[in-house]
Image 1 (cartoon, helix red, strand yellow):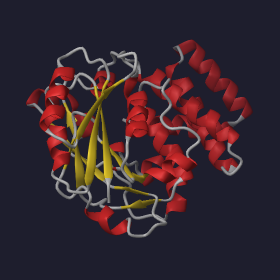
Image 2 (cartoon, one colour):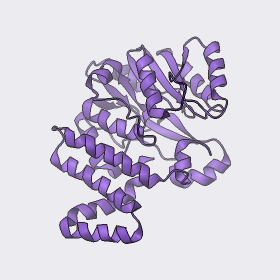
Image 3 (cartoon, rainbow, N blue to C red):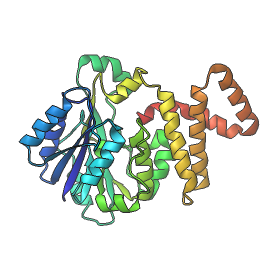
Image 4 (tube, rainbow, N blue to C red):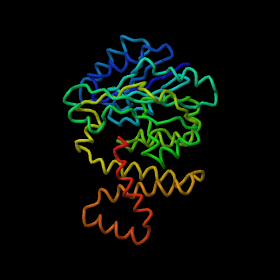
Length: 313
């Protein structure tokens, strides 16, 4: 196996070295691609030092050296990658020693196009744990039991609460399959939940298999300054970002003839539920009344699925 690990770097000067060194422990890793995204901190200098120290580390910036977001940074990393397989890691997260144990065996089968595993949680400080334990807990982010590839897309979309989600940090993909089969890579206009949208489409186009899902193979680093915790304290309105996510999924699904009508309807309901959730009170009740008159099943499902919003974080 020759694996390219892509790490988008933004505002992560304190954490990126740990991320890189957690990847360097694996002989299968052919290269580590850092894409520095005009960080406001000193991350660029730290990345330059890392690239000078380790021969397997390659450092890139966007051509205009401006900030383009995690999706665009991952796209650039994919473009620059030369390995047969691609894995991703956020700059404030890290791999565990068992990260590729299942992948070594599963990828011996050429029909396996991707493998996913379980993500754990690490709190970098007691303050972060106090603030965000209710959000993340000590739970694994994972698909809860083994499923056939044909069931992964429907399971993530249609049974979000019971099926579970896997994380970009625990995904390994055949590069050729990704390039040949995906309609596009990460959607660069989505600044949040772009990885969730990507994983939905990926599970539709590629045959993805469960690897290690009963214990963590990588750790999510939770601290006061990462993107998700900023969403949690509402410096970015989460209802808007999630509405945009499901709007994007809805737009894509309507163009795909192979997606069943019940799944398309469920996606439409999810988008509708977030539109209702972020509407002002007077408008919200008007929307609910209108939907009750036209589609009781839809609005009931939409309101119910508001409870699963936390699953997308």
